[in-house]
Amino acid sequence: MKLGLALSGGGIRGAVHIGVLKALEENDIKIDVIGGTSSGSLVAALYAMGYSPIHIYHLFKRYGKIITNVGTGTILNGVGGYIVNKKFNISGINDGKLIEELYNEFASKKNIYKMSDMKMPIVIPTTDISDGREYVFTNSAPKKKSYEKYITDIPVGAAVRASSSFPAIFCPYEFKDHIFLDGGTLDNIPVKEVLEQGADKVITVNFEPIKIDNNSNVMDIVLRTIDIMGNKIVEEELKKSDLILTIPTDNEIGFLDTEQIEKCYEYGYKETLEKIPEINKLMD
Image (cartoon, rainbow, N blue to C red; front, side, top):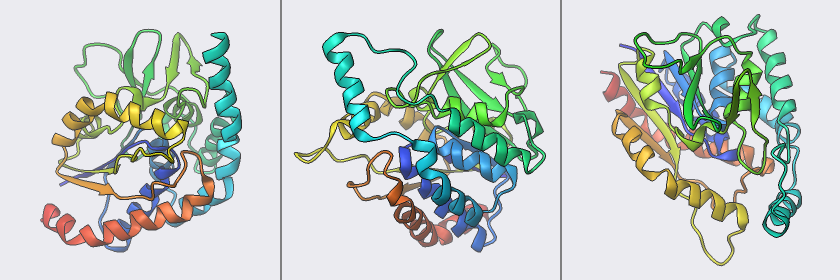
């Protein structure tokens, strides 16, 4: 039986996924297929390359600030400029180039260059804002699909960059005739795609919704709004899961607050350890 893991997006909360993988590893639970959207793709790609959970954790700690490379003030000023002047350049605030370069470097150390070079089945969703369709970066495209949804001939760094291009923070990523934006726009939890890659059972990892109160900032409200807009899609994906790990996190954790990587990792690790009996039962 093949076990799949679907990792949702959620900014720096994506570090939760590393803790999940570490807890599974310690309990000899093997993942055969992995998928991740947005920040989930950052973890899924490294794991599929062959990096261990603890190695991924150290990479996040070391390179987190370099990857995000954007401050809250810049985000708010950019959004404010759009609201007041109605002139917000499509180039966005952060071009995401550092993500692409870093992940290409991580991949090359494993003799991996394009998605097609990956040995472990992997799926990374993205959204083309020019045609409104979902596309999936993968190393093996399922057969009998109605349109060319699956892309294998793209560098790993480009795939991760495209899936992680969150609106108003990272600019859209152009590849061939596509203009890609954050995969969470249409598929924040790629359960169906993990199943398409041959998984018999799928564990989904997502987060408790952000709570909105008087202390919430602009990004909190934006994220909660996106959550609400995508609720129906997420609900349908969760129905396809065999086990859902909804990880509670601190509502004070900012979207790109790299100082909270360790805390997020611990949330994922502890919650998964508590669910190990259920996971073992699922496998049996």
